[in-house]
Image (cartoon, rainbow, N blue to C red):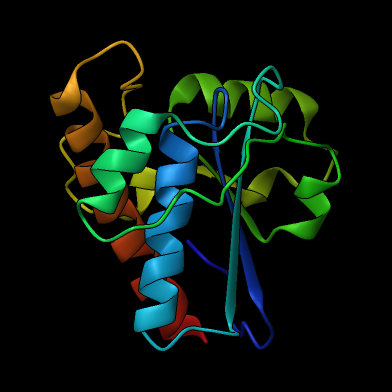
Length: 164
């Protein structure tokens, strides 16, 4: 899924709706794995939302708490809206669900569409290809979103590490 001969910093952007639940969770997990997995200085991650209404806000407190219980620090992250320039800067832009993928495709500049994928495309045999939005659910919804983000990020970073 990734291009061959990755010989520089590889940049990944995770995208959900408001950038307050799923994409910051994926970013926080990735930052943790990068730091503890020997990829520091070789992989850069960020997150954004297709909707800018939460720009500047921290992640949802429920996601911060659920992630912290697993050792991921999301507290310093701030929401931002996906920008057209992101398609040129990031090597891979990963949607958390099909709605995000559709929105991203609409604004993607010509020639950059190959950079857009679903996070869970990297998980062979995954039970789903989307990370459901936990926002309107209870604690179990946040746990499930984290489970899926961990699986996606782990598979993604293993693939990136093989290319580096």
